[in-house]
Image: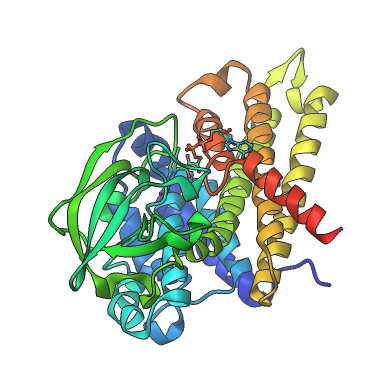
Length: 383
Ligand SMILES: Cc1cc2nc3c(=O)[nH]c(=O)nc-3n(C[C@H](O)[C@H](O)[C@H](O)COP(=O)(O)OP(=O)(O)OC[C@H]3O[C@@H](n4cnc5c(N)ncnc54)[C@H](O)[C@@H]3O)c2cc1C
């Protein structure tokens, strides 16, 4: 058992850290508040090959191990969590395509997705169904050599940049259990009847768009059915969500670490009653709890990632990592704000952005209560 990243993982982390220090941190606050799309940062991520994190080398990707993958999200989210969102659903869908796509589908899309020339996301959630994915109603009806797709998806991150966009849909409404009737269609941008509608207003997670997306009789070639066989969509997306949970765990750790770093810095600079506030035990206790919980979250995430790298079952482990790390991020950002006093509430300090970004991690890739249910079921199963 070795709790330290390998030399290769440390070099990778250093590359990311330098990139974040030079290209993300200096602009994060201003661009986030202006609601500006971070085009230049995206170009920098392309140059580093980050869009190919989960793409096999045979298709031009980096195919990093999942511990490195988790580290990448931690480092980026330390600078600006919204940027991590640009890579999040992209990388989980690349993983899904690499694992479940046909060879023709992999050759068609993965090389361009690896460079970032093409980008992607994932469309699961609907206005009436999120946690209960088997209740989705977006319907695909086979018509000759195409599917006719009708329905609405909500909260789709990267929707304006996704091409193709994997869409979970119902191909057999009579199937029991319902998940056997679900499939994933790769919908290409520009398909008539496929529209990216309004951008949804958000508390945080700015820099990347989250949109309502509609399909009104969109004809999607049957060749775009992920894996080529109907009825496998639920399994495909559920296993891709394990990769997503690792990236959310990484993002949570990054946000929490940034909050802790900011609190530590501030506690040395700010004086009250004739001494730095970091000399007060009440402040020290918060800093100690933050640092301890962050390191525990980091090790839990690396452990889950390393197990997945070894090909072991990790539905419970990735759920634990995401659940724990996101709760740590919620606590750390609030405690950092408390240590900052009134300045913590100011838009001139970064802690208010961290505080606004943290709650999403308790919602996306399975709400934390849904993950608790999954973990409890696994405990009962294995007892
Ligand atoms: C900024 C943002 C970006 C997003 N990006 C994407 C994206 O790119 N693609 C995508 O497909 N989706 C995306 N989502 C959607 C996200 O995945 C869902 O919001 C999430 O899965 C929860 O679904 P819901 O919002 O429908 O909540 P609901 O499922 O309606 O849940 C509401 C509440 O009920 C609780 N609940 C529901 N069922 C149970 C149960 N069985 N036991 C206990 N509690 C339960 C939940 O925990 C929650 O507290 C995004 C959301 C946001 C806010």
